[in-house]
Image 1 (cartoon, rainbow, N blue to C red):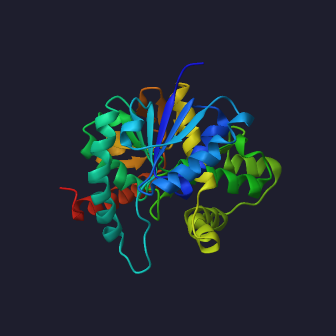
Image 2 (image 1 turned 120 degrees about the vertical axis):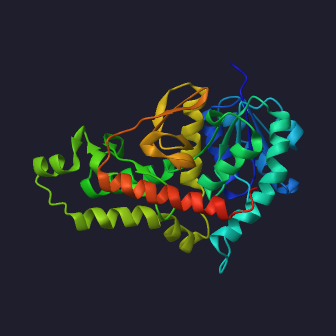
Image 3 (image 1 turned 30 degrees about the horizontal axis):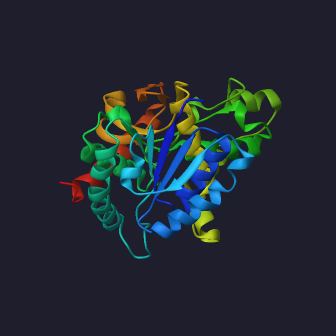
Length: 314
């Protein structure tokens, strides 16, 4: 078996769930957990390591940045969550300071790794990681709207009572309140939503579309209101991205990447359908979305640019 090493920076709810998902999928032979709370990382690593008898051979350890040396992928889940009454820019600036300390240490020991950012706000922190790392942009990208896209497909599968794997429907733009549901390119078994509804005799109005779009956008808030955090689905989304990288699948995923011209966008990290393989985020698939969807995408991108401009990155 080829030796593969994946390091996870941040052993909290998302980081530990991601390690568990990677363990179950048999993607890595070595998983390293790094956290400012070393005991937490050690406890998670011990717990996970005790389960390796039930899965493909894997070694799970807690360590420091030096122990991540030679990682194929470094997954970044560390960072602070937004507190009540705290502005978005406050949160961004706090996490930028954390990343200013963290990213140089990751780069020092992993000059050839792919950096996969999961910490929120993921589009902003992916851009920050790119700037601080000095890596080529195809080796620095964020989990983006891969989870939002999965939520979209899941909600459509419930509404139409079909296997979610038969649905192709993307969320693009920011991973957040300005995200865009691309109804113009949503399909079920290769048919557009309208074609499918006509074929099977289902009434599906614009009001229904708006309700589903809002449900996808608000999904994280609904989960957080109930359990305080999200972790399982995002861990599976990250694992899907890691699979695409390690197996060089060239899969098209809505990861957050540096835009260099698609749809007239530049110098912003935002989610669009992107080929992902062993060399990282390869290229954007520029689908002919509707004019309204492209306009909403630009609004989303400008919002993100304004946050970066107002931050203390420089």
